[in-house]
Image (cartoon, rainbow, N blue to C red; front, top):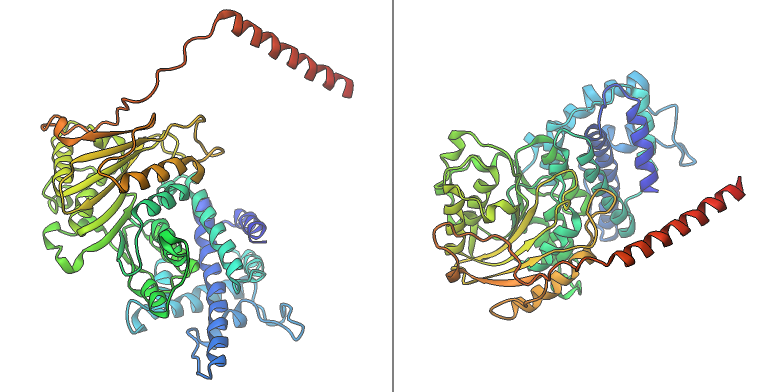
Amino acid sequence: MFEQTFKNIDDILHKDAGCSSELDYVEQTSWILFLKYLDDLEQDKATAAELTGKPYKNIISPEFQWTTWAAPKDKDGKLDHQRALTGDDLADFVNIELFPYLKKFKTEAESPDTIEYKIGEIFSELKNRIQSGYNLREVINRIDELRFRTHAEKHEMSHLYEDKIKNMGNAGRNGGEYYTPRPLIKTIVKVVAPQIGQTIYDGAVGSAGFLVEAFEYLKNGGADGRPNLSTKDVETLQKGTFYGKEKKSLAYIIGIMNMILHGVEAPNIVHTNTLAENLSDIQEKDRYDIILANPPFGGKERAEVQQNFPIKTGETASLFLQHFIKILKAGGKAGVVIKNTFLSNTDNASISLRKLLLESCNLHTVLDLPGGTFTGAGVKTVVLFFEKGAPTQKVWFYQLNLERNLGKTNALNEKDLAEFVALQKLRAAKEEGPETENSWNLAVKDIDQNPFDLSAKNPNKKEETALRQPEEILAEMRALDEESADILNAIMEMI
């Protein structure tokens, strides 16, 4: 139901003069979807309060509740067309009354860690781009058909919302940078294995994929896979576990909504440029237990931003890596995606950064990913897994070699990464990782201590299969010709 509804909404928005791309479709669907979700959430809370005999005060005033302006119902439970606004009346209400009302929540909320404050932030950053009030009415009617009451409904909706975020990568305007493949994120979370009570941080949060998957992992029982959360655990996950920062407005808003739609009611995500923070100002109270991130790469930061870092470089990802090392607690663990050229670049900044990482952290694992892992991005990437506090002695490399080329129609999946996860568990129990055709160990003492080159050069990879004999090739060609002839004859008979 959700999937077809989203497709229908995209078709409606495609006709609207105010929406021109997938980015606009996601943005506009998001705020309407969010208000419907919020209405269902309030109904659930009111019901729960009634069962315990406690009063419940609605977040949204009666005149701005979904059931008043968006979907008033008649006595049969159907849309009351006499009371439901449409056309210019609907557009004016949304633009002139609803959005200004919701924006005020930011200044009137008791504190930033409340859902009221997040509502105010969302509607301070967004605006209604749907120009036609008739198109807006159609979208609202479609979304009103959705229900977010059961766990299954919420799970399906959040999964499809992730798909919409993924599709932003097809829309240009750097939409793809908001999305890291979920099978890769799930794998990184499994390897880092956070625990309830630890703080988890992403300084380049995007659509909050890492925080969402970490929440799902912990909610479902973590490494044991046996969910048995106490009331205190639930509160810890809601308020004291997940933290993020995001520079771009749309990504920031989608990140907040993504977490709320997955069940974290007041995400601790801040709208700020992480790299504008001077590293020397980070104190122990600012540090985190776990870092999960895929910082943007290829960007160039201004000279004044570079002054915040001891290793000066314009490369955004290199600045983020310095930030992550600094803001990670002693004993803390990290899984960070970065371009594979980081392992071997010969510029002074890259060499200094590798030296810093190896001397201040235990870089125990490097996952070398194939090209096409990130659809729409031609760069090759690696995942760095490290723990802060002790220098690196040995690095275990795993090279993901697949028998197919990755792309939009043939994306990375969790099965592709299953061997890596299994072998990594063995590595975690020993001083070095298993040696296989796809994995090997590198002792830091054996590498040149000047460039600290960590290139992922697999010494265990078997030689390519020997060239086939001409007779074998000709026999295969004859077989293919015969198969083609059979297919062609079958087609002619049908005609």
